Image 1: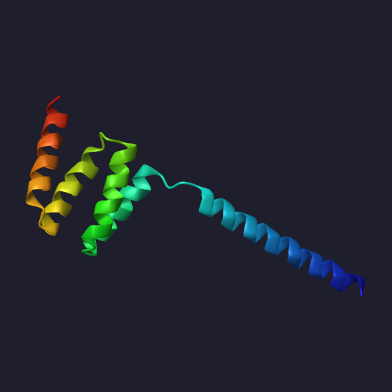
Image 2 (image 1 turned 180 degrees about the vertical axis):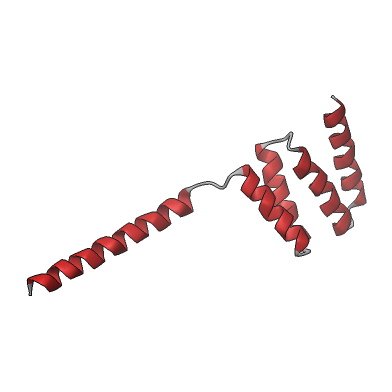
Length: 98
């Protein structure tokens, strides 16, 4: 009988450890690069609306992220927002020149 109690305690401890690991993983914030990589994947999948949101999030964190700004311009062209794409490209050009 003592073994079953020990086994149940071990199972309970394992379940608690797993729950803690899941909660730690869910509370950690993603890195800027991981957000950018996800945006790239979304562009490949032609999910431009969501890619647009991810790219804006990258640029909120790092306004000088030139790759994200360039990809944002491409996404805006694909979405048909040419004026916004022109503006992004002009800002990108000014950012690179300075």
